[in-house]
Length: 140
Image (cartoon, rainbow, N blue to C red; front, side, top):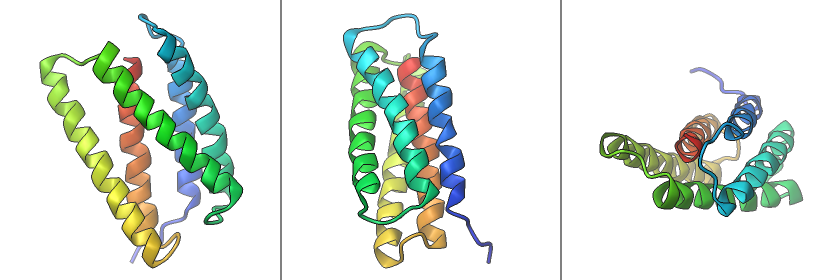
């Protein structure tokens, strides 16, 4: 069995930094977009800090989880209200959103069984990846 290192999630947090940088090239910006940029920047910091030492229910864990909820909600709302993909990409968007939800459910399930176990980290890695793609849809 392959051992999964939780530090992969700290490295994946740098996808948020890439999204933050790319967001400055977004053409059409509404007020909510600027708030989304700030949230993604903060999320990069909290995610990187948390996955450096992932202590369950710590202050940084609770802060990171709150920022994630705000960020994903803003990304989805911004995409569906202001930056709706063309019909062919809309199908892909909803598939990615579905995979994001499944990854969340898997991560949550396995984290309750054993915090930072192989399956928890695997599902959470997918969660980071699909969340990153949802962020890209918001800024594309």
